Picture 1 (tube, rainbow, N blue to C red):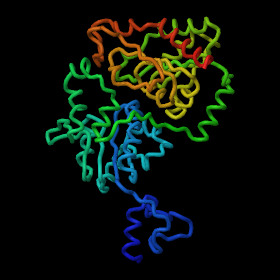
Picture 2 (picture 1 turned 120 degrees about the vertical axis):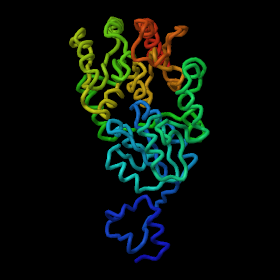
Picture 3 (picture 1 turned 30 degrees about the horizontal axis):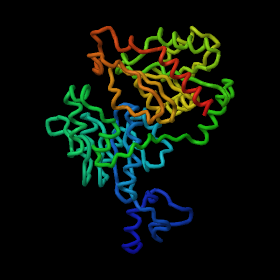
Length: 381
């Protein structure tokens, strides 16, 4: 058996799993730690909600590392969002939400648990996991969602007070999320990285689609989650916009989206046979990101596709209706269109009693002029 101090080093080393050697031909258990990589502060991030929210939360990682430079970060999320956290240099372990993962978590101990989600499912994890400090949101013994620390109170109140959420609040979501986790807010960007294989895939797809670096490419993220279908621009509006862009004989157009958008994209593409690029919608989130990385400009509603465009550092022209535009940061890379002065917006309603006036008010001409202005600025610059 190794001496006690050597064994303690193993217990605090990120490299040691107890399953296989950290290095070939070296027995850490017998000979002690060869290259100690300290765990430091052990942090669990819980984020099981929408995929866009998961991408948003990655912007908190640099602040976490500033406050806890020696730390090990675990992140539990749903299976459909796991791919968004691949190749992230700040995260040590991504855990997929499952019965197996929940069983494992019962045996682990953390210094800090940070729960982003206001939900019973995530709140129960935040309460049950062994931790010295809990931040964000949990649940009480009767199943009510509660803030776990003073910094989470404002974020919590946004969910309880419509007037605060829809009319008064001007703070960015990243700002009050940083406050929720007792972090300093410095407007860090989302964190998303491609692998070398994905970069090669992107280059190969561009060649296949006859897209060069000289082309001016516009991406249309046409849909959104089925949870809030009224975020979508109409098919007719998309067709009108694409017609305007194609009439300029300048731009290449790509349709983007996920499985829920396939029928919609196919219908839009049917108006422009052979004129636009209708990308696959069922290749998974990582391939979807590859396709979305190609256009320089992304035109989108407030959706996962918008957050992905922000993460990819694209110029984003985003329209808003039922959701809160004040909370979204485009990082000086885009334009937000919203129905200013419309009494009922934002509202977060799943059914609209006013014939979706906020969507009808989207200024299509402004989308065209702002897109042209962006590309012209790149030429002059």
